[in-house]
Length: 392
Image 1 (cartoon, rainbow, N blue to C red):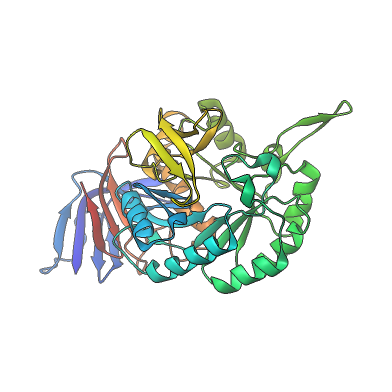
Image 2: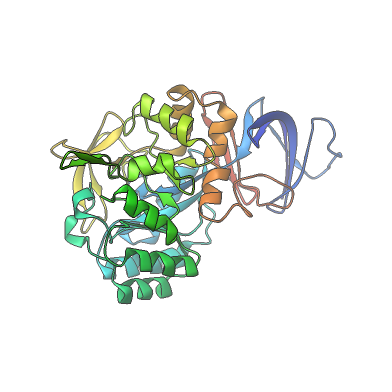
C-alpha cells in the first residue's frame, strides 16, 4: 500500500522544513519539498493539516502500560502495552524486566520471542534487563528479595537463552560487574549503570570496562557523600564529567523538577541525553491502586498526581508517563526547542543502543515508522512499517 503524506512540517536533524513523504511497501520511498512529488494514481493521500511529522519516538526503558507489565509473561501483556504506547507516539521500545527469579526471566524471554515481530503496536527493538544485579542500598522500587551479585553461570545462560537482549542495567561496584560488562560488549549488549552506589573512581573504572550509559539519572544513582570530612562524588556527578557516558532521564515532570531537567540539558547536553518513560502498567490508566512488576509476584503501588508511588508514599515506584509527555515536558519545563526534544526522543536513543543505522531518522529506504503531531505534542497518527496503528 502507498501513502502520500502532504501538508506537514518535517522535523529531522534538529530542523523544521515543509515536506511531502511517499511511503511504499512499508518504507520511505521519497521525501521532497511540497509540490515536487510526482503524481501517483494509486497512493492514499494523508493531509497532515500543517502538523509536524517525524520518526516515531523510541523508548529504551519501559516496563509496561495500559494495565500490562512485561513481567506478566503473557503475549497479551506485551501486545497490550505496545499498543498503548503506540497511541502516544512510540514506534519502537525496549520491554524492560525487573529484578526477578531466573524462571521469571526465562519465561518472559519466551513470550518476547513469540511476539517480537508483531506490528499492531510499537515495534519491539530488543529487551532491557534492569537487574537483578543491583545495589541493595539503591534498590528503589525493585524487590530486594531478587537482588543479587553477578553470577557468570547465570548471565551466560540468560544471554544464550535470548539473543535479543539489547541493554542490561547493573550496579558497576558489585563484585564481578566489570567482567560481566566485558562479556556483554562481546555480545553487542550495552552495559548500563543503575540502581548503584558507585563512587566516581568506580565509575571511571566501569567506563574503562565497557559501561557507557546511566539508567534514569538521579533515580537510584549515588551522589556526593562525606567520609572523614572528605567529599566523594558518585554516579550522578560522574555523568556530568565523563563524556563517554550517555544518560537517560525520566522527564515526566515528577521524578525530576524543572531545574534538574534544565541542568541535564545545559551541562550534559542533548547529544548525550535521552528521555525514558520507565513506565509501569499504570501508564494510560486511571488513578488508584496498581501493581509494579508481575501480577503474580509484583508489589502494590498507588497512582496519583501523574506518578506511581509506593503504598506508604515514601518514594516513587516508576512512572506512568508516555513518550509524548516526555517531549512536552522537556519543551515546557526545560526550555528545549521542539526539534531538539524530538531528536532526543528519536535518533539519540536509537544511537545509544546501537540501532541508529535502522531507526531514529526518516530517510529513503528506511522503515516507515513515523508520527504526526501538533504544537502540544498531541499525536494524530502513528505509522509503523507503513501501517497505520493509531489515528486520533
